[in-house]
Image (cartoon, rainbow, N blue to C red; front, top):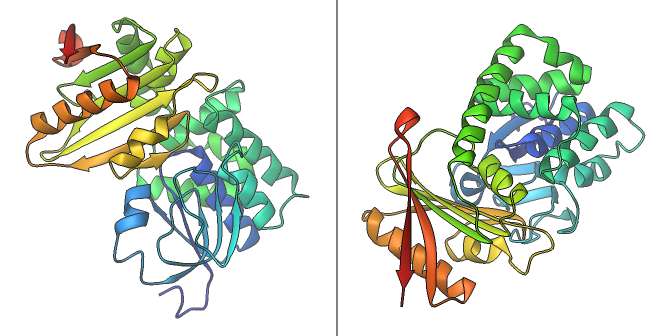
Length: 308
C-alpha cells in the first residue's frame, strides 16, 4: 500500500523507547512516511515483513531488503544497503539521528537523550520515566499515536489525557514489579524460574536485581501454551555476556541485556535444558536457582539446587 502511494516506509522496534524514538525521527524526516512496529522475532522471521523493500529499519534485525538501517545490537548482522551500525552505541536512536541527518534538530536530540537514558538503564529524568511508562502502557495503535505526536510536538504529547492513562497503567505495573523484586533474594548470579506469567516488567525486574548486587540475571517465564521467554542481564563491568545464551536460543541483544522466545511443546523439559545450559555457562558444579510460585498476593519464592 505504501509503495503504491510512493511513500517511504519504516520498520522499528515496538518494545521500548529506543524503537519508538527512532520511528519518531523517521517521521520528522518524512512526515508522509508510514511506520510499522514489530518485535525482533517478527522482524527476523515474518514472511509478510520480508515482502517490501524497507526504506528505513531501526533497532531490529534485518527483515529482508533494507535501504538504510540503524542498530546497535551485537547479535544483529549488518544487512542494509547503508548501515549505521555500532554495537558500542548507547542506543539505536543515536545512530538513527545520524542516518536521517537530524543532528541539528533540538527536538530530535532531546528525544535521543531520553532514549540513551532508558536503553542504558540509567533513567535520571522525570521525562524519560514518563515516556518509558507511556510506551510500555500503550497498545499497538497507541504506540503509533505516540510516534506521530512525538515527531510533531515532542514531549508535549505526554500531557494528552489518553497518554496519561497509558502512563498510569505502566506505573502500576512498575510498582508491582518493585514489590516482587523485594521477595527475591539476590546472589551474584540470580536465576529465577516463574511458574506463571505474573504480568510484571521482567526486564525492569532484572535491572532492580542488578541494582541490589546481582552481576548476572536470568528470568525464565512461561508465555501462552507453548512458549518460554528468557530474559538475561549482566552488569557492564562483570565477566558475563547476556547475549551468548540468548543467541543460542534464537534471540539476541547486548552484553548487558538480551533475551529469546522459545517455542516448545514440552515446557518443563526445555526449562531443565535452559537451567543446565546456565549452569554450564556459569562454570559451576552446583547452581542455586529460585522458583516463583503462585501469583498476585499469593506469591511464594522457593530455593532449588541443580547439581551434576
